[in-house]
Amino acid sequence: MGQRKTRKQAYDNLILKMLIYGQGGSGKTRFIRTFDDDPRTARVLILSYAGNPVSIMLEDPEPFVIECDTPEDTNLPWQFLVAGQPEKHRFRDAYEVPKDMIFRTVAIDTLTELQRQVNARIAGVSQTPAGWNKMRIQDWGESFGHMLNIARLFYTNLTECKRPVHVIMSVQERSEMDSENKVEKISVALQGQAKDTVHQYAELGARLAQRTIAKPGQEPTIGTVAFFSVMGKVWAKNQLAMSLGNDMAFPTAGKILDKVMESPQWQGAVQE
Image (tube, rainbow, N blue to C red; front, side):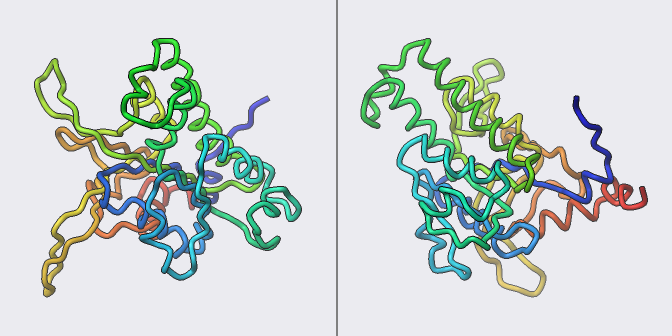
């Protein structure tokens, strides 16, 4: 039998289910690392599928990154997290995780590369451009099922288990022409049905891009901006709080949590 979840319970146990996307160099991996800077979200376990961990490895604390070579490399970390991160577990032994280390966030960086590996496995080819031509119609169905399973197991199971964790996934950006309206659309770089379905499991979807940011009394600088609202041709999603606004310069996990929890709709839960 299911259990009722009240707004007060949601506020007291606010968990981010987030998907970010952008071009290479937009700041996706660096944004993920900010989850290590806030006690509400640290530490973050990064499952790297051709992400860019080099850009963050000199940060303090040193990020906990697992370089994943196959789609199955998500299995053991997921089993450990869904079990509540026990002191004794094969995951701790395999990756030399101290028994007192607790993760409050898990990230997959990036889903785009993870799907490439899935498709290569299904098609039985090496990961080369020519390989994708060997995907049959039924193969795309299998690929979709695998990606949907990843989204469900991480976004749903890990945010409702014994020790819930924040879940964030990154995706590369793609630009395509809407043949019906003759306009360019920017969205997630996933193939097949996955591009229209995986993001449904996230509650917050943001596009990251490099922009010139001007602060009062300071020289303009180039930095990352997160866009939370659908703006013309750009896809975004916000089911958490309108207080996030349309965008955020230099986004961090802590800034997002603060904005969400100070919003009127969430503050109403405090009085309940």
